[in-house]
Image 1 (cartoon, rainbow over the protein chains, first blue to last red):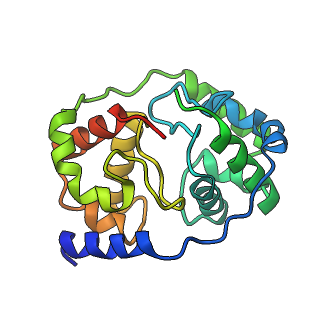
Image 2 (image 1 turned 120 degrees about the vertical axis):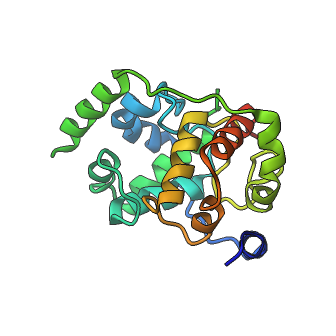
Length: 104
Length: 104
């Protein structure tokens, strides 16, 4: 597939219906995020530039990535064991919390 | 490994020396980002919540992920062919451009 074709395909995806989002509880997410704050910062602004800022990120994307780490679809030696014990509600709550924070 | 142990390990990583960053050229990156804008937005603020906002993200993290897509370490059917033709300079430039943008 050429790069141009991929761009067209990607654009078509961009216009496709958006997957349903389960709104999480940002207040509950803040409590659950304590263990995450060592790397991602207390407000989702990580201090190490090799780790992503989560503050202000789309909740749906954050939830998708946490589920990918949990299933092993996305591999990371630190994130895999962090995501493994999370249920879908935990993930939605964490995603809602980080999405509600301000990127700095 | 328990979640607590992982958090300690992650915290130790967070305090470890930061990997060297090759500063890219944000102006060159803006030109190279045209093909990316279909999904990630012209300024790195993607319109589809399943795709990450790149605006304001750490350049080092962005570069690391582009290299992971290029090598196949991180798998994505759209990003793999987009990243494949990029050389390290392209990646640094793109990372510098998106890092310089304002998240919305």
